[in-house]
Image 1 (tube, rainbow over the protein chains, first blue to last red):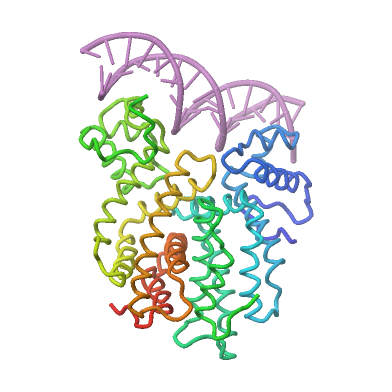
Image 2 (cartoon, each protein chain N blue to C red; image 1 turned 90 degrees about the vertical axis):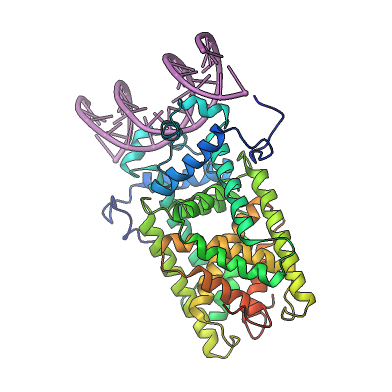
Length: 204
Length: 204
DNA sequence: GTCTATACGTGGATAGAC
DNA sequence: GTCTATCCACGTATAGAC
C-alpha cells in the first residue's frame, strides 16, 4: 500500500512512522468493539499509549482520522473484490459478495455510512475526497457494466452509467435499512436488482 | 419529565404549544439557511428569543429535536405524495416526483440523511423510531407494488416486498451521491430503476 | 407549565516547551 | 514528534422565578 496520495499533512514516503499505522489500527479496533459514537480522540490516544494532542500531529482533526480509516478500509476491500482484468460480470458478483462480508462488520458499516453522509455537506473537510471516491467507484462499475453490455449480457434499455449509480446507491441505502433491521438481506436484494438488469441471472 | 414516555417521535395530538411549533419552524429555517452542521441549540434558542435551557422543556435533547423535525417533514411530504386510495402506480410516480422536489431542499436532505444514518446505531435514542419509520414506509410501498402486480403491471420475478426495499434504499443512497455531486439526476435514475421492473414505463 | 440563570462535563482544537 | 497545559464550544443538568 503506497501512502503517496494521502491528505494535506501527508508525510514523506520514507517516514513510515509506525505511530500513524498504530493509530489507525487502534482506532479501527475500538470502533469494532464499541461503535463510532463511543469513539473519542482521548480514548484512541489512551489506547495507543500517547497523549491526546499527539494525535493532532498525525491527523489534524477527528474527521481526518475517520476519513483515513475509510480510505484504509477501501484499499483492503478493493483488493478483496476487484482485481484488474476481472471480467465485468465477476466484478458485479464480487460486489454482491462484499455486502455479504460487511454484515460481519456492523460498526465499520456504521462508520462508513456516517462519514460518507457527513461528507455530503459542502463545508465538510472530506467533501472533495468522498466526491472523488464516488466518481472513481461509479466509473469502475460503469466499466464493468459496459463490458457486460458488449457481450450482450445486459437487457435492453439498461445504461451502464445509470446501472453503476444505481448499484452504488442501492448498496448505501441498504446499509441504512440493515442497520435499522438486521434481518434485511442486503446481498439478496442487490442480487435481485442485478437480475432485473442482466440477461442471465448472477446465480450463486 | 413530561407526560408518559413519549418517544422521540413527538406528538402531534397536543398540537398547539405555540412555542414548540416556533422552535420547530425556527430550527428548520436555520438549517435551510446554514445547514445542519452549523446548528446549535444556542442558536436555535437565540433565534426563538428564548433562553437555551427553555428548549429542554420542549425537547429533552438535540437528537430529539432533530428527530421531531424529520417527523414533521414526513407529515408534510406524506400529504404531498401519498393520498390513501391512490393507485399503486400513482404512488410510485409520486415517489419519483418527491425526489425531484427534494433537490430544492439540500440542507433538509442532509438533515434527513444524517439523522437516519446516526439512528442506525443501536444505542441511538431514535433507533426504534426510525426502524418503525422504515417498516411503515416499505410496507406502504409494498402495498403499492402488490397492487401494480395484481393488475399485471409488474415484470416476472419482481417481488413487491423486495421492490419496496429497493426503491427506498435507492432513494436514500442517491441522496448521498447527489450531495457529493449535484449533477446526479435522482428522479431520472429512480425512474430508470422502476422502468426495469414495470411492464409499462412510468412515463412522465 | 414555562421560562431564566448558572454551572458542569465532555470533547476537540491550540500553543509552546522539551 | 511528542509532551503538558490550556481554551473554548456545545450539550446537558440543576435550581429557582414567574
